[in-house]
Image (tube, rainbow, N blue to C red; front, side, top):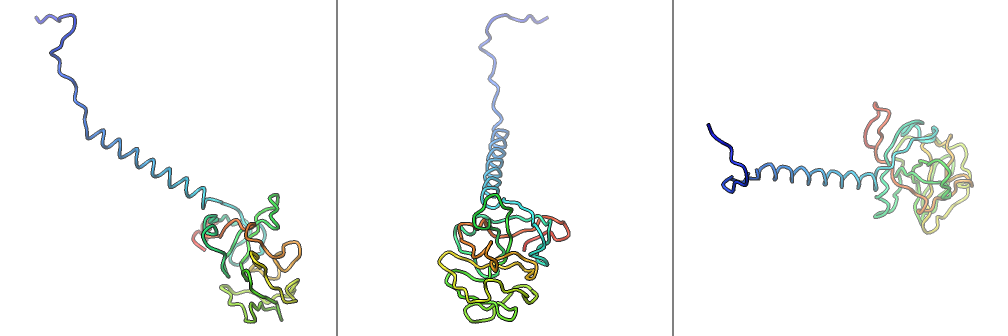
Length: 193
């Protein structure tokens, strides 16, 4: 029979650390940190999710569609004609987001004649099929956009509150939230715009 000795035993061997487990744990920690960084970046710069209100952008977007907005792009570039943008009318933070298509950019001259949009004297090249406009509004007379101003229209031209009307008018860049880039709902229309 073996007797157990009491007291300290300096003859015991130390347990060895399993380095492969430590390396694997470090890899997991790094992967989680990278994932969190990417998620934070996407949410901060791109992650604005909003709903389309009304039918002013039909057929491109319909009321109730859920979209993602790229808030970063216009920090490095300017909106271009045919971009679909999200903005606050006159910077009113209590208003819902408006979604419209950029027609003219700073320095452009535009006019709506016979239901068609002319930018700098030439017929505007639409990226989508739109109906002729019944009401030219403020654009019945020639408009020259100032520095930092954009003229926007809804794709549903005869059912859209846009730059043709005084309560919206020309959009200043500081009121633009970002560019619409992805539809998340309804699922049948899921994808990039």
